[in-house]
Every structure is written in structure tokens, then in C-alpha cells.
Length: 455
Image (cartoon, rainbow, N blue to C red; front, side):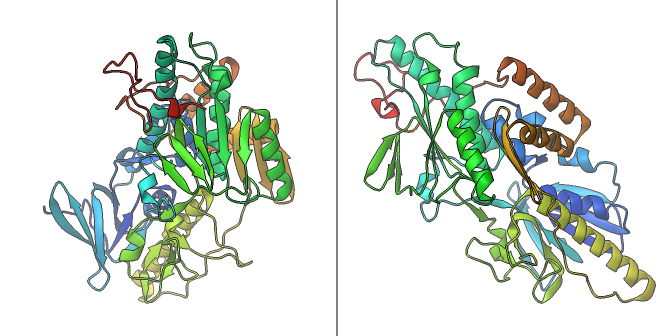
């Protein structure tokens, strides 16, 4: 497969990944005299902070995703390649990609790797099919399928005369993603689905949030963590802290000697950096993140930068920068500005000045818990409840890419707020769930229900 650069430029910049970091780097570089190639395995950018809304049927995938080509179409020096990055040859300065069984090498003068992160099961990858995580659109649709299907098969089971017990949903990990999922699932059970079934009562569903540490949202101050716990409990979520998951089997989760039956198990307990980090040959930490220098480049290769969730860099206080969108956005802008400055200086004087280190200025953190429930930290200002939720809502709408997406999400959220409706309750794909089997009586090809899914 031959490749031709869409446009010529004195310097070639290759960006791997079209998340927040990669896109912001591309936008910052678009006005520079460079040729930019953006490589991603998908043809769209996902607004990850709202993935949980797709997973809980509040939004459709198209409302939180935009085609990469559409986002960058106005920049004539940017080309987009949908391909899988297989590796790098840093000595020859090429990126090795593949697609449709073909292989290609993309040359670069500067390389920006923003490949993100994936789920971490702490050495138990066999749990992945039983407890999906939430990092991609595909993950969100799988979670939505399992959650909605659990109610459907429970209804069929009850309608056939089987004893009805409350469904158990278990979320492992009480970080922002776990808290969002647990709070929204509780809201769905008690409101959105409450009147839609005849043989079961979704309001009897138990939502369990399991956290290995001593408190939920442990990265937030203790007062906000306590507030989050209280808001979760008001929503009906049963929170277990200082509890380690030791085994996940179809329909069952174990915490030491304690076992719990579960219709759906969701994983939000940890992340691991993209395996592309290891392929750079640079030092990495235990989570696979690349240990970058203060200017976000890797040791001995100042032309190679790593940003976003894949980069490990400490702030002035010695704390590792969090893997959140604001960090990735600022890192992408910083690297884009740095490359733009260096290419201009080299063109004018043949040399460049020393690079300033990257500094992250934390403007605050927010975590949503459910309807009118959230926490926010803006420096010394701590906010909980409705006002924090409003701040979270408007900030996330503001950062959505594209006016159409902002408008659609605002309308959808307004409708959901006043009606409790969840407009994207579609079950697609397989009609089976792990741990659910045919009843001993009344066997039919379409029924997949088991007592293991009930408490």
C-alpha cells in the first residue's frame, strides 16, 4: 500500500491517536508550515467523559462522537489515516502501520504518541468477558445491552411463573467512572424503568458499588468523598468500601469468602496504558505509562513526545498528573506550540532555544453521581449537590466537539431531567448474558435466565 502525503511541508509530524491530546496537538499545529498525519484505528473521536451516558441509555453514540476527518477538514495540511499502529523504528524515524492486511511505514520528523489507556484487571484478564469496562463506544454499547437485557429476561422469567427476586447489579471500583455508573443505574431502576414492566419491579434492583480502598472518589478531599457517599446512598446505591474482589465467575462475584450473585458486573477499578508505550523502548512505570521528560519527550529522542493517559509526569508537588481530559488537552496544546516554535526557529536561524517544561494548572475537578447529584473542587472551593451538577453539565456541553452535538446533548438532558426518560434504550447484538441459563422447566430457545442472576 503506497502512501502520498496530502500536502508538502518542511517538517512531517505524525500524531498517533485522536483523543483529546492528539486532536489539540493537531489543531495547534495546523497553522504551522508542517505536514500532519493523524493515525487512529477508529474514524471518529469519542468524548469519553460522556461514555457512561451511552452505557446507561441516556445518549446515543453519535451524540458524543464526531468523525476525525470532519473535525480536521478545514486544515489543508492535515491528513487522516485509519490504521493500526504496529510499532516504531525510532532510528529510522518511521511509524509502522497496518490495515486490511497491508503494511506501511510513515516517516516523521516529529512524533506525538497519544494512544490513551485501556482496562486493567490486575492480572485477571479472564474477568474481562464477565465484567466489561468503559473506555470505548463498543464498551458502552455492550454495557447498555447487558443492563437492559437483564430486565428483559427477568421479565420473561417472572411472566413464566418463576419466583421473582431482585436483580443485582455490581460495579467494581468507586472512582469517577464507577460512581457515575452506579448512581445512574440506581436512577434508571427507580425512575426510567419503574413503570415499564408488568411482572417485575425494577425499583427492587440492588446496585452494589465495591471499592478496595477506604472511601469513594479517593482522589478528592475527604469532605467531598463523604458527600459523594451520602449522595450515592440517597440514590439507593449500596456501597462497600475496603472490600477486595477476589474472583469473578459467570453470574457471581467473590470478595474473599463472601459471594454475591449478580445479573450484571461492570468493571471500573483500574486502567493500563496502551501497549504502544512499551514499543517506544522508553522507560515505563508499573501501569505501562511512559516516563517522559519535563518537555513530554522521551529520553534520548527529543523529537518523540508522549501525551495524555500514556504519559507519566509529576507536577511540582511530586504528584503524578491524572489521566483526565484537561491534562491531555493542555499537553496536546503545549507540544503543538513547542513544535510550531521549533520549526519556525529552525527555518529562520537554523537552531532552536531550550524548551520550557510543561506545567499543568489544575482549574478544578468535577464528578457526577446522578440526577442533581455531583461534587466539584475548584481550588479551596468545594461544592456538592445541585450546583456542582449544573457546573458539571455545562462544562461538559461546552467541551463537546461540534455545535450539533452540543445542541443534541442539551436537548436530550433537558428532556431526561423533566421526564426521567432514557431515550436510547435499544438492545443490539447478542441476547445472552454470562451466568444466565435456560430454566429447568419451560425450556425455549429464546430464554436465558438463571437463579444465579437473582439474590
